[in-house]
Amino acid sequence: MRILVSNDDGYFSPGIALLAERLGALGTVTVVAPERDRSGASNSLTLDRPLTVRLAANGFRYVNGTPTDCVHLALTGLVDPLPDLVVAGINFGANMGDDTIYSGTVAAATEGYLFGISSVAVSLASKAGRHLETAAAIAVGLVERYTRFPITAPLLLNVNVPDIPLSEVGGIEATRLGRRHKAEPVVQMRTPRGETAYWIGAAGDAQDAGPGTDFHAVGAGRVSVTPLQVDLSLHQQLPLLREWLAK
Ligand code: MN
Image (cartoon, rainbow, N blue to C red):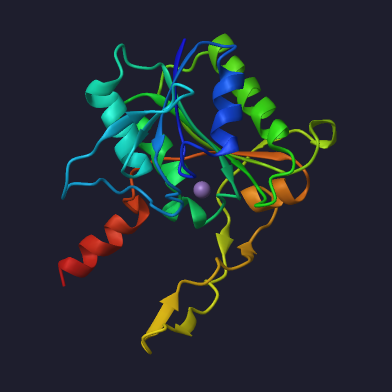
């Protein structure tokens, strides 16, 4: 099996190093990742300038672009033959609920999925990152499962792992995305030149976090696995919209 590994924290992140090392036991791993932290980059492609790909001493390739750029380049000429699977992570910090819209980790996996390749985004649900090993073991377990029980339709899985020892993980749960409260207020500050600058505030706390959600599973010490789709159409609103447009 060929596995393309990427992330949004940058090619130097301990999360991607551990993920690539552990997945190396299951197949041939190629790493293409951003040259710096691009967390929150979402599904952005760099179209206003060319991109460069450089080779790090450890064999990782790094790109002066976004996570989406990395996977896009890999799948459109950089990596031959194409991978069977794309795995993004291990991200420092959860990507649950509304986070998935902004996440570069999820975006890297989404790009693989858009190319018809099953893709998995793996996040450790804490910025402290004490138990990276837990997330790596879960990622390996899911990829092993995928090889033992292949699924014909491409999958896009968003995986969030509680930051606890593997022995304390209470199972793996299929979940839906929860929702967050609106974000914290923007932080205002003065620059040395007397201008007002704004720093985007933290994400809000979980709001829709009941049983069945990603927040609930991780809060209870379980791994959350959410199947995602790219179709943003709100199908059940189409009849209402047609009616409104016919008025
Ligand atoms: Mn990140």
